Length: 318
Image (cartoon, rainbow, N blue to C red; front, side, top):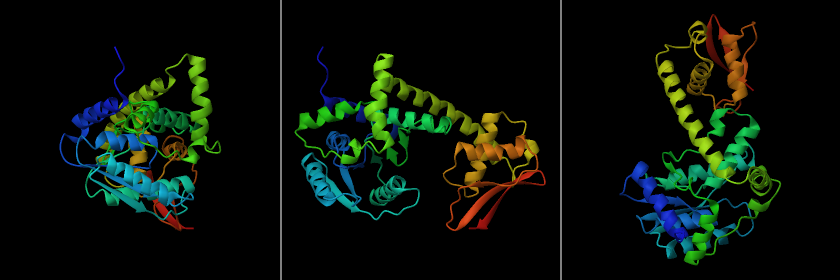
């Protein structure tokens, strides 16, 4: 039997995704870079329901405005009802990649006007994300990868290989933009894509990307269950948590309760190392001082401490 066309495969993935997560009516937006993944996604989405392409121009590379204009033209020719170019200013917080990502998502969130936004992350992107999380040792949450649906963000192509989007562009006669950063070996993700994953595929006989994606799904299901239990416990805590109430909890639950409490208190970008250090204020108390965690306010530092048998949070000026 002949393999179905790439465009048909993408539309089947979109239809299945909508049936589970977003329903069959209403408009949606596509975050369009002009690259093969997002261009193929926009072209596949447009015949299914009214689709607006949102094109973020980061202004970081020469000719970015021309890339954005070409992407807009191709989106409209593919059937999108509208295509809007979003020019953004990028800060420096968290480094250039993190700052660009934060600015991009803020712009998309503002421009979507209540509609869900389709993101063109593929199964290959998911596999790379799992490997990145594994290498950083950030715990199961990072290895669980990207969620298919994290409102308003939708990732309908997480079960589709990147090669399919490239074939879809060829079927439709679209000429995608190829970001030179995607071939720059200075970036860790590029080296994973071009060196590590092919090596693993060869050593293990293929199917590694799919196996990593399945691992992400299994871990995400387990993590969601444990997070739900921890959320119920945290909801029953009145004020700052007592260490004597936290100590008997299973390790995985207790650390999730601590994470939820830290986030509610203004912590951001928590690492597994930070959470475990706060956990030791409960389980290995030796009179140690506070644990610094990343907070949500500039020019302030956030500390978790153990005070009179309770965990407490304190802010101090930098």
